[in-house]
Length: 479
Image (tube, rainbow, N blue to C red; front, top):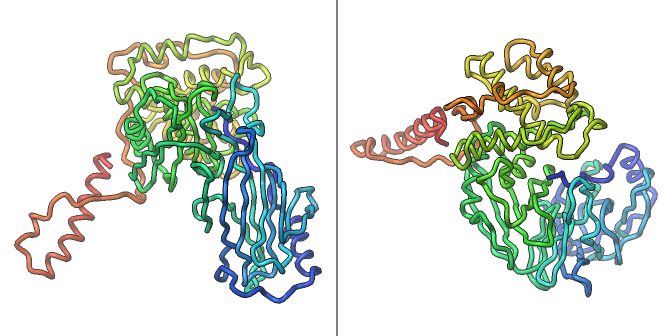
């Protein structure tokens, strides 16, 4: 459930300065003919992928079309091992990051990068493997590379991730596989796809996996979770389903909207790993140390709420799940006091259930924890505990600092009565909230109303009918 680590280094102002100096000092050979790219576009790349003799190792060969419109072109290496290069000159940035500069003479410069299942960045929160390899398949971290190029037109450095869907690249596999920005899967698989709410959802099932949750059912749950969260949906979500030896649980990358779950992941549990890992892709906030607990706590809260909302579990099951472990004197805002890395997974959602009820009571049911989540996503910079207090007060219409201090900054925890799980029809039922306007796929259900109109009137009527139908569905929370 931990996030895939972000890039180990970012391109900073000193790096930009170094690249500019390098471009100015290096001899500029004449552009090579038959090169690709238009003004402002990155050099396109063909990627070939194959497993090594050891299935735990995967080799990627990136062959670029040298840009005719760039004065300089670099590939910055933040993860993976560069095993070979042709047409690139190895160098190092001022910050110590390794990079490869195009020699401006090679028409199709290439890099061969090796990644391994041992290059995990998820930490030691759980026992088991976050990347794994078998004779049938391999799941390895995708190398973290950045393409930097200096267009001739404006002299401003630009940066792109070459494995992003929007980057001009083609991938081919010696066997079969899927190349994501964070996860690289090599082996046979089955893929299930759904387009909804302006997003594309992909579920990739390893050839020897037997999912507890049918992929189509999992897609239903992901689409519903997306629909019930306001804010901007990801353009594309990529999920993998894997069997042993991958560890039980899930693993997500919020920065690339990708995750995997073990084949035994079920929707009918409070943990609801499918929705839990998807929620991580919707967390665009960064958190200060005293708020570190909120990432897993909010994913756990919304995942359990989804299971409850769709009648997959009982309230008593939620209560037992989040109150079954007490963790002694653990304090959410003080990670050093956590006796177990599971503290934010259990204590955190319990506190958020109670906080949700407090907010609903204070606003007459008009607002809830979802509004807090939205505003935290919109916050610029790290969300500190003080920021969190301000956001909650703004949503609730009154200060709740005393309540928050009691349950976030001390070891005290809410009881079941405060959460509301012991009340029939209680507060754990999610209320329907109209979604924020955004890209939605509206369908005009009927044109009968406009049947008697003339041709010009029909054109106007169809447009107006689609608009009215879409707005009506939005207000009813049906879309």
